[in-house]
Amino acid sequence: MTDPEKREDRRKIAPIVPSQSVAGRTLMFLVAIMTFLSCVTFGGVALVQKSAIAWSSDVGREVTIQIRPVEGEMMDANLRLAESIAEATPGIADAHALTIEESEALLKPWLGEGLDLTELNIPRLVVVELSDPVGADIDRLAREITAIKGASLDTHAAWRQQLNTMAGTIVISGVMVLLLILAATVLAVVFATRGTMASNRDIVDVLHFIGASNRFVAGEFQGRFLMIGFRGGVIGGLGALFFFAVAGLITASLLPGSSGAQINILFGSFSLGFGGIAGIVLIVPVIAGLTAMTSGVTVRRFLAQIS
Amino acid sequence: MIEFNDVGLRYGEGPEILKNLNFSIAPGSFHFLTGPSGAGKTSLLRLLLLSLRPTSGRISMFGEDITRLGRDRLLALRRHIGIVFQEFRLLEHMTTFENVALPLRVLGQEESDYRANVEELLDWVGLGNRMDAHPEVLSGGEKQRAAIARAVIARPDILLADEPTGNVDPELSERLVHLFAELNRMGTTIIIATHELRMLKKFDYPRMLLNNGEIAIHD
Image 1 (tube, chains in turn brown, red):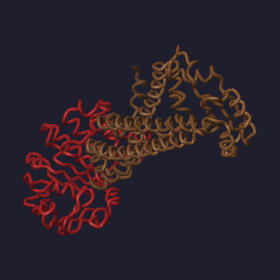
Image 2 (cartoon, one colour):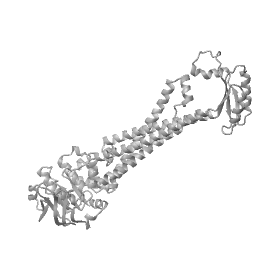
Image 3 (cartoon, rainbow over the protein chains, first blue to last red):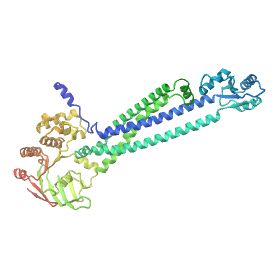
Image 4 (cartoon, each protein chain N blue to C red):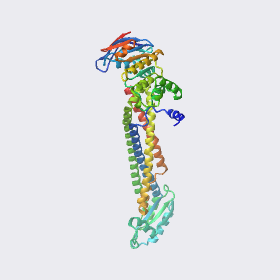
């Protein structure tokens, strides 16, 4: 190394609070773990909500007329009658009866392939698409199809309500878990900060003896804690994004074909979407800020106690 | 500059460590503070360093009654006082240069402003070639000189030293006292706590003798 390089190197002044310490690393890992748990909880809630909204929205845009086979009734004629009643109802965009093949295809994921369903008197469905889910006169449709023997209208309302209740419960539970994790983070950061301050007590004492104010000392430590919080937050956030990416890939590879399709139909894909990713990215500065704020208060209280 | 009036000190409900101390120290003077172990030398130094408040009496320093000052004002006044600890108290993660420059960083000075001064002082105390060394590789004498340099870099009005020659050989002890004398000639008030009789005999400075919590000054 040449002399100018040595002089250049000498100009890099060490921080007053050492950047690497066991207590600092412990706090960083703690923040990383808490951020990971927060992000996974948030991501899980986002997935459930996203799937529930998509499912509810899809289901809400159509109703189904189910016609059970009744002895003496002509199924094809009843299907055409149901179609015409539906199409004459205000707020209905389209109504079409599923063919035998389409009805059998619906059952294949559940009953498997290779079964001969022709001998089975399966109910037939008329899918009614709503142009205006709110304004459609579903009551009139329900009344009028009673003229067809064996016909019933399924608005999926019970399913939707159950799904909304389940999704709402999961979201509330997730928010509660998230709040508990944040509370646990605050408590853990308080203890870790006090540990870090205690392990750096010699630095604090020397700074006090040479006339440094509590504000100066707190500033030096808070800067360090902000960095620790930010690094821990980034590690935890990246870990959570990696977790969701891997989980998505594993889900897709373990459940190929019809099984995967069923999972996708029922629960949606294992994809966070923009909102989920943005939320996780937002959690990182929130946790970093929370760590810095909590550490700041703890440092100031610690300094006030020892002064 | 320093005036003690009926100053007493006790820790909690314990016995009185210092009793009715009455003395004054003129600016620019040099005093040895001596007495047997447990006499209260370190406690008196802590009072002078403003890191303790007396339990009775009044202490005046820099024209202010320090028994009535708030914490922030005390910390501000402490910047006028340099301290050399017996156990050096250098920060292990910092080089000699960084340790010595620490009081100037606390004062908010930029490295470009203080580098030349710190290097000059380190040369003066004989550590010009040890600027980049960390305390773990310094000898006892080098640590002591680094601690002294740190105590005086901000040009304090008062320099306190607690057994500064306790960890070094007799030859270096004398050199250190000469160093303090040089600082004193530049106007710094020096108070050195020591119980080394050899040192007290060799250097003819006023002595503050502390015994059983009471003080007697011998000019």
